[in-house]
Image (cartoon, rainbow, N blue to C red; front, side, top):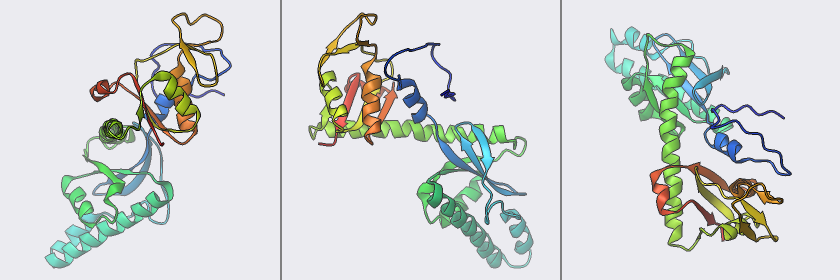
Length: 268
């Protein structure tokens, strides 16, 4: 099976072994985000489906796309009745929000809104589920092509990815005080295989070759060409954590230095 990465590889490599090297795939998995882009302009309200910095489709259902926009409503009603116009605008944004939440309830995807600052503030005032919204980026009427929208929205998502990793590191640091963190490699290996791994954090530049000498015992080696040597045990550990419903991240964030090159938060 061929899996194409959305991210460039550091180097070209072929690995032939009895086990899959899943570390590069885990990195791709952790850096791949499927989300929605709500395009809210004077002429249209559309809900687009994005993966990272590219738009891969459009969500069309009984709600989307909307045929009219809030600006049309404002222009029509403001002339005769300001209060009525305000209520109409609020009702319009409320309708959009509820439609978006219905999609989120089915897909669990979150959303970046492409609109003006004023319109995003209006959306937040009526939002039933504010956690659905990752944030907003300003609409540029000179650059409304899909690739421009996706690139702008992706900058918002990347901030959340970085914050998510920082939150994971903070979670690990707090778990140290509860004696729920393992940093010794062979103990990490054992806990991961036993299904006790809840959160694994590895320095992106850390690699360790080992020879497995028992069910849970490892010998560190420097010559990866020797028979029976696994050139990077972190790949196996990460797979054991993820396959048993834990989380694994590879990062170079500065906060990781206090944890060392590898740390595992255990469930028990």
